[in-house]
Length: 201
Image (cartoon, rainbow, N blue to C red):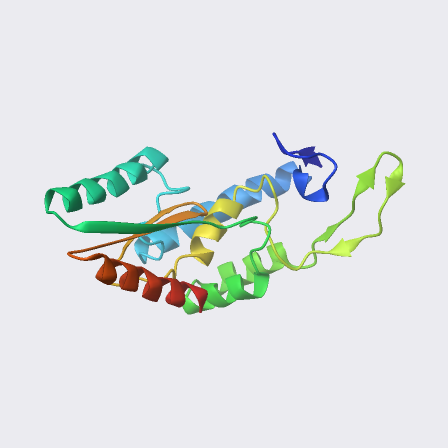
């Protein structure tokens, strides 16, 4: 376990687990990653609004999108409202069954879907503090820390984030902003609230 910076080290949640991955496994993951990227790129699975873990995209580019939207609204004498979301422990809470279901929904090739299912299945963990070793537990959610597949799997997991023509979605990894513009605040707030309802479903 690695301690997170600026956290209370007396709390269990202040530590990040380490996954010990074999070198052969890492090479295999690189091959799988190339196949996943080729497929989702050809089939436009990852939304254009997602700027995290994608070549040619950065946090700065996404911030410019948000800033430009606000400035354009200001120049047009419109109100701009936004809700900023940060998914806590996003990688750790990724539900395996839901991820595989999305692979099926997005029609990934069967062989890739089966491989990812096997990659995530039957993972176990154990914690050692000083000389004390815990019992072995089963992992039902999350992807391995340090795996090259994890960021792409998260992008696929969140690829069906709700969209509508009244909202501008801005995603960077597990951080999201939803923006709405209108001639009055009532419209803006109503649009944002409807989008939040859709996200909660």
